[in-house]
Length: 120
Image (cartoon, rainbow, N blue to C red; front, side, top):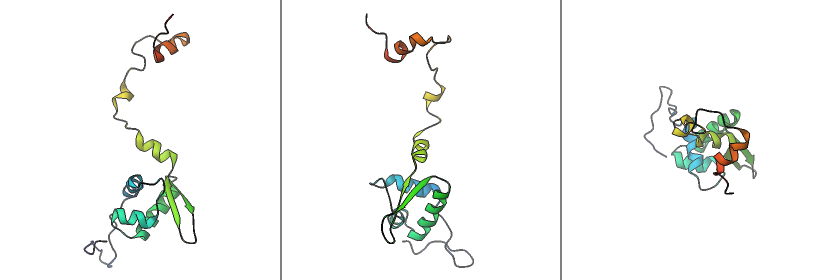
């Protein structure tokens, strides 16, 4: 951990780790679950700092947790957090014409449009 981190007037470290930093660190792990000490190493901060952020993320419903030993807790992203992270609202897909025409598509034509016209 860096010894030259900024402190406030009371001598406490200034918080520089955001909730999003913790979420990204979880995504960077090689496992579907992570521990606070593991994430602390990734983020170059104390495991207590990460644990506090994880508790906040848990309260927001963004991560789940499970106690796996006397003092061991594993954390993982919720399905909602994973899904939201994968959607890029700027992707041209979201502004594309859904069927390539101005007229509504009849129910009988949906399969042909989705999968191509069936050969007769």
